[in-house]
Image (cartoon, rainbow, N blue to C red; front, side, top):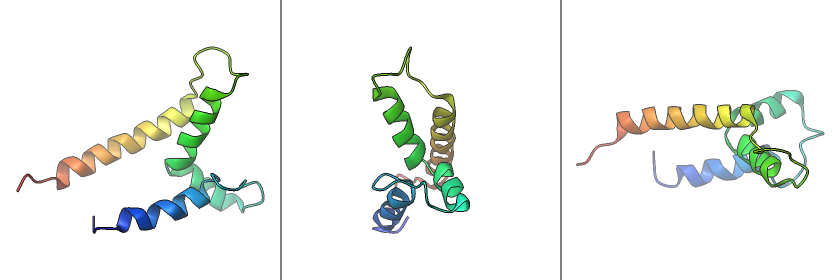
Amino acid sequence: MPAGLGRKLLLPLVFVSGIFFPMDGAPAWLQNVAKAFPVRPLADALQYVFDPRTKGAGINGVDLAVLGAWLLVGLVIARRSFRWT
């Protein structure tokens, strides 16, 4: 990945994911795109875990599945592209 590309992608992902403002008025396609990227499921999972009204372990399976899928994709990409030299 070119240097600085991660920083250029992170801010738009955070805005689209509804971290800074609610996404209730956004188009449905944009909300679906935001759910597919890992920032929104991570924020939802953390909000669910730290909510005092949550009973039990506080684990939301859908959010964990999306984060796990991104973990696997990232590991595959890292394994194929990483070189020691």
